Structures are given as structure tokens and as C-alpha cells.
Image (tube, rainbow, N blue to C red; front, side, top):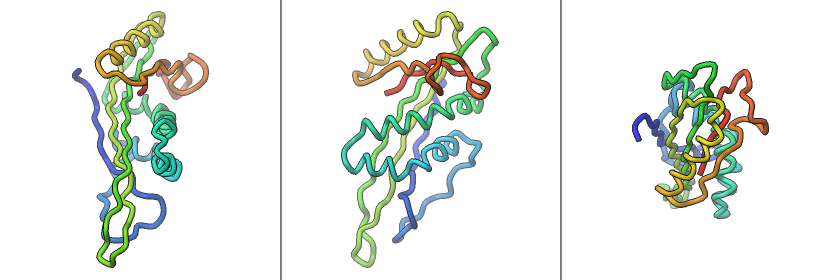
Length: 174
């Protein structure tokens, strides 16, 4: 599939940085990486806690909820436009992995953070066909990569109506 935006970065651990780990400056807040890290940043503690307990489902649920809020901005950054009679279907694949503790020069161990990998793509489809299109896309993704893919009935709210700030109605997530 072409037109996929890929992002890979590290969400630094919560709290003050200890040890020799150096984090590169975060990407610009207007860039895809900046949008992603800024959406996940406030959830650092909750993501770390869920991952520490082996609860990937909770960590991913938190990540998808946060990233659904920036999905339209990701589409806009890519220059993807939609017509008034269309809606946008967003596809997000998020992977989170706690990085291993790193030994420090004083013999202690320090957290390194969480590796974040996101693949994003969107499609503009006729509003009347959006539900069927999203379901079909979910089934195709399921066939290619078995797992808990699901249709998110609304990207940003419990209703299936676009809001002033979010034109996306349907999404799929894993």
C-alpha cells in the first residue's frame, strides 16, 4: 500500500531523566511525529503502567483514543483533501513496546521509555458507503494480518457524525 505515513519514535519515561540517556529533541509539533508524541505524551504514566503489567490491550486502547484525536490533522499534513459529500476513513496501526532498563555508570538501572511505531493511512469515500467500506477494509486487513482489527464506529466521538474539528467518521484500529 502506498501513501502510508510511518512514524517511529521514543516516548521518554515520565518524570526527570536520570542517567546518560539522551533524547533527541522532539519533532516539530506540526509534524506527524510531533502530533503523535504530543497526543501520547500526557498518557505516559498510564501507558507505562499498562505495559509494565503486560496489559497491551489497555495501552493500545489509550493510544488509539489519543491518536484518533489527531487523525484528521495527520491527513491534513499529508495534503489529503475530501469533498463535501465524502468522509474520511482512517487506518491506524499502533505498536507500543517498553524499552529495557539500561545500566548506568553508577551501577543503577534507568528507564529508557516506550518505543512507539505508528502506520497511518486514510481514504476519502462517499458518505453513504462509509460504513460498508470501513467494514470491508477491516476484513481485508484481518485477512492480511490476523489479529484484533475492529471498526471504530466514530473516530472522535460516540456519534457517527463529523464534528467541526474532525471530518473523519470511520476508522479501523488494531
